[in-house]
Image 1: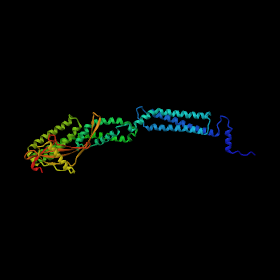
Image 2 (image 1 turned 180 degrees about the horizontal axis):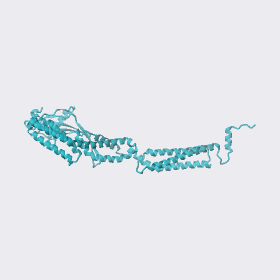
Image 3 (image 1 turned 45 degrees about the vertical axis):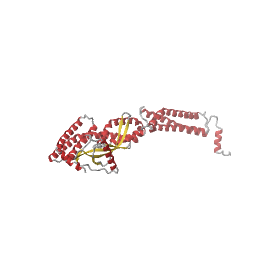
Image 4 (image 1 turned 120 degrees about the vertical axis):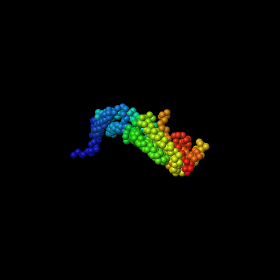
Length: 430
């Protein structure tokens, strides 16, 4: 009886006695494995190429492509290269002869696959680099400054209290055309960055969208305000004339500085805001201005006969400001007033505003093509000056604070007709 030969020895003998050019059993297994691997790799390569060609065929040259798109295809290429590496590693591990037709075919494919992947990547390398540059915030030197301004404009233009801040409305309306142009220019600059970093989900888009909505809101509010003013102004003027006629008939001068003045002021306030919203020659605006001037003339005529009574009933405004710097501000205003009008006898000053009015604005400088920011506060103080033996006159003075320059100035050149002045008996200045 022949003795049994161990399996391991049998395999070794089989390999050693294999004919020249014939694969051993382990080599044949390795080639079988890697031929299957090669088929998977070839499919991945073809699928990658076909998918890319299809997707790129749907795009136009000017379209923006997120860098992640190319990264995805780079990863797919890595999978093909991993297959090629695995094939060569397994063949080498099993000492598969390079001249074997099947081994040669596998080696040839790995070289072809590597060349195809390299060629494939080269086809989009320039576009990928271009998109990565556009998607990198570092390549936008004005990004922080511009979006700070975008945030400022978003807050400014969503403002709705037109009657409470007519000066702000005037500033916003004056800058509106420049703001629209600037915002459109900025969107052209930052559109690639926004599109490539999330589109509508991008934080930058949300900030820009807030500004756009603010601008649109301001435009809509302005249109509505003007329409309302056209119907409201005649009502205020009619009420003012009616009250003035009654005050004159009943000899009640207080009505002129009270209810009559309030009705005129309400009409004038609306007209002032409207002036900021339309050109000066707008027919609707001119109609409102003419109506106000007519009413004011009639009311002044009615009040003229009660001038002495008006002066007799006038009183200083109430003291309202409670800031700890009140007395220092009062002293500085008096000092500035005396420097401007050394012959004036100041009888009293009243801090009639409760608080400083702070305003932050941005103005477009067309010369430098940049925004100039301002951050200022103002506090009005009433200065009462003796103007005859029995009569005193009130004038406004202004404490102006520039928060950016960190300076404070005092405005006292206020004796012109553009500032409200009132006369009262010196005996009542107390």
